[in-house]
Length: 285
Image 1 (cartoon, one colour):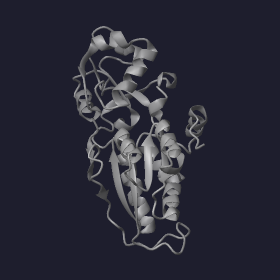
Image 2 (cartoon, helix red, strand yellow; image 1 turned 180 degrees about the horizontal axis):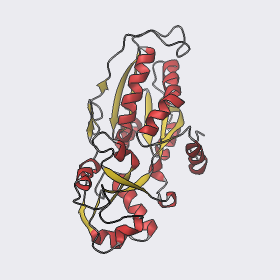
Image 3 (cartoon, helix red, strand yellow; image 1 turned 120 degrees about the vertical axis):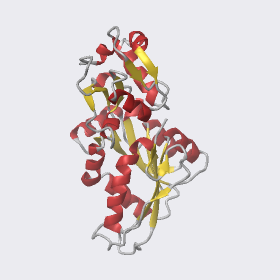
Image 4 (cartoon, one colour; image 1 turned 180 degrees about the vertical axis):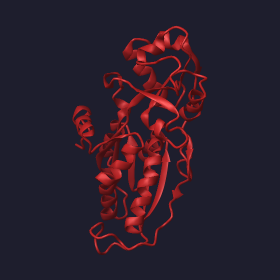
């Protein structure tokens, strides 16, 4: 289950949040001279990216005076909606297959790699069970809370990690709760009700959670490849292609990518991001 962030509910993705327009002069070289201040751009993304996009969008508005009408919601629902006839101008989605399908169906003009997610172990502060690796979740008597009922890829990704490590049966015996919402699960770990869980690193960077849990890396070879990739692309129905291209260029710039990194993602422009682009084949055909 995705949380509601700021102006929009991630599941109620058709209720867009229109960010405020900043009355600023267009920044030099950002847009062609003919671009009018006061124009707007509709941007959709999967909900996990919302915190980063909210910050990046405010920065873009300040630079350009362009109003960003932004919606962050469950990626599968957005993808199904776009494939079914709904339209937006820029879409940042999760799972490479979705971007490729939108391209194949002539819904998207092009896409670019945006960022990648990674999974980590979390424990309450002080790490009361002395968790050092994912295998420690299988130790008898370690109370574990897992988001196994969370919307895809939440629970599915966690189970894939456990299965790849060969410990899923032992860990499930230790599971005192199988949460349906990663956001609701975090306070349970913070309070010490559970001694460990597996989440995306981005959860540990959210306001309210940052600095309140111990974070332990999980080897990359245990990650399921499907959920790792986020892309951004210009849609066929973009009213102003120059503006849409400019916005995508900004989100893929070092300035905006630093925002995504701070929010717990691996930026596509980073050395690790470039390696993942090659490894996972994140390229527009």
